[in-house]
Length: 67
Image (cartoon, rainbow, N blue to C red; front, side, top):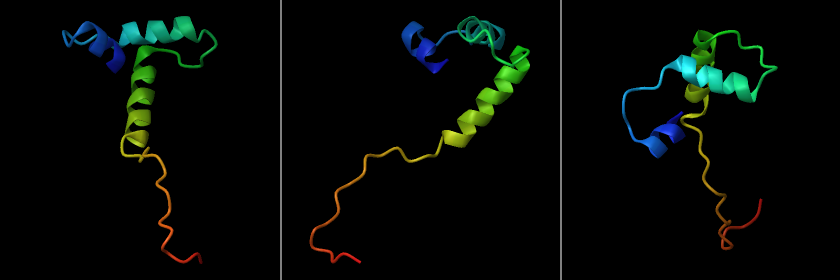
């Protein structure tokens, strides 16, 4: 969704029905029945991962003793 907005500019929001149709075309065996459920699942997933830390692991400081 956001990728499409970055590619095509930020204009009138794309209807959720359009995103749902794209999803159904790419995933025909999905159990999601309509665009309202698709939208709800999207927002729940977005909220679940929004604040996760995806930074690369930093090397340990060699001066600290190992425990």
